[in-house]
Length: 547
Image 1 (cartoon, rainbow, N blue to C red):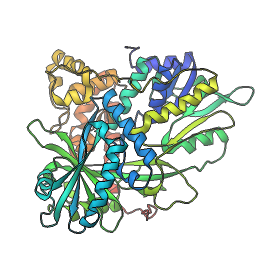
Image 2: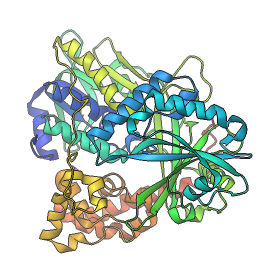
Image 3: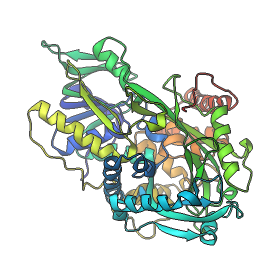
Image 4: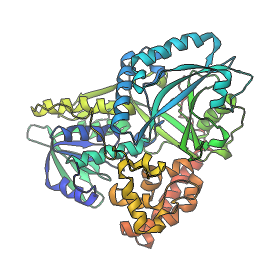
């Protein structure tokens, strides 16, 4: 199915002129999921996002589509079952974006995530994980001897390594998945626009919300809708405050940081779970961007799970976070990784629902919550990346009931844009990002061979991808292109800094930028990088480690 062009100007015109069954606030994974679910049920749907699609937590996750082995260990079998079922649906519905990822759990003689003493108990847990739904992936866990485990991560300490377990989950480009769901929703008739900030609600004579006032950056418009769903993640309380006129306090944000280093320093062929000395948590070492001849370009390490009490818009990876992550890595591997080796960082906030009695944020439930205010605002919060579709289904069930309609969910087997197999001649990089749409990117290169050149030297993106992002993916800024349409900034900030002026020049004719705007775009990106670098040398006393 092919809908209208995914163009912001056309979408804004629709937002102002049409009346919708549903307005969704928030362009993260949950918001786009709600939009797609509702549109495929036959509702007229609008979505507005204050910044860019996936600009919040949905581009800053661990990029894993998984059941969550630790949730099983915490006894939340139902959550694991649901997540593993959704994992399988994503593998089927977005095979170009979601792929199987094996994990190694080392069994060490001491100081490891798993000692020999508890290895037997872990094997029972892995069998339960497989039986709960892990086997749907077509593989089951298995035990490795020390030699086999070392072959998968040769930088582990040989003298401590006893054996290991391999089990299977999946990974995804979170920002690209979010964008693709938004584009699929648009193909099914939804009006979707970024850079649209809700500044207030409109109400009917009965006091119930019947739309929203939206700042588009070029003026204010009113979007009229019979129902409104807020799917704004950690900003949910801000939207509630617009509705209720008082400060809401329902969420407990938890910060998770990740650090990118060159893969050659780790050399893990699969994801590896390592322990954090003196803490109950473990971290993932995830190989990232496969090389055609074997090995990978990068490895990212994370995630932390700490209380967060600072401003929600720009969480940073600070001095404490780097000490925590690099300390765990250097404790677990034979190589030494320093701050000078770090090429990228990101920090995201989990929108965890407050509970009456809770200690560490790591122990708070990842289940979602849906509520309706007296004025009719439906708010969906909590949850996790893997279960976004189920969260959306539950929210739209409530919307349909509120509207007095009957319409069943259609997203369980709905394949996303690009899900068809690309031509076999398409290289792996483009195939894993665009799927069956990859030839459209290659067409740009055919029309202008300079677009086949690297976007950022040393990384695999080509200049055509930036042009495609503007023409077909609603990218409107340099930051959109470097952080979300590509993941170049997360992979190598330094290389992106050097390339930023040239990339802005490339985007300028596409977006109508003059010299002043090109300079402003570059300066804004430089400010983003400066903020990250400054945070890395700062200890935040308000950033309380969850204990």
